Image 1 (spheres, rainbow, N blue to C red):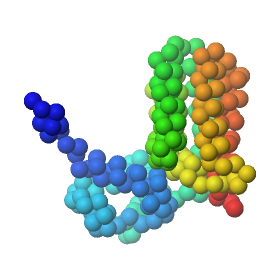
Image 2: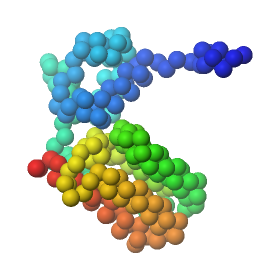
Image 3: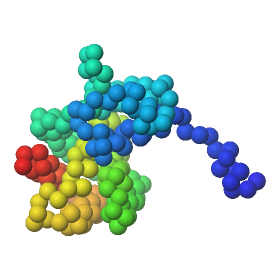
Length: 230
């Protein structure tokens, strides 16, 4: 069987999944702005996908808190507010410090390997100027860090917070927020901080690891607060 024939036999992705992934990407990349109404007819036309898959995608997005239902008005992209941004960073700090407490008494070897691969993906996204890819690779790095805990509840909590943070990550990676700090320097700093997090995890250095996470999260938080308040 030829390679082409094998590809032809691969199962096609369900249209509802395609619709979901396309809408998610547009939300993360802010093509669909916070508080923007998402009209079903418009989505069907834009995505070139039938009404039923689009509806299924919207139901999933609402269950994941990425969109909100407005009575008699349809749905909107979840707004970004100072209040929920503050709550998100507070939660990120609590959950990732919790990961440290649990992970340091476990064998994290396999997950550390995945963290290294994720950070390589971060570097490659930077080199190819792929901001969405950078957001996804950064998310996967932090999820692999969370998996070091080998605690499904912590992993789920970090996932929920980090997924919420993706739009903010895109803002951070796609905008010159501090004129004194070029994006290239910011990207380089992120990669280096990831490497240091890995090394501290290997050394089981609790104090150093928590300090690194604190600085990593605070840099992210300050960039977003500056962007939102300037």
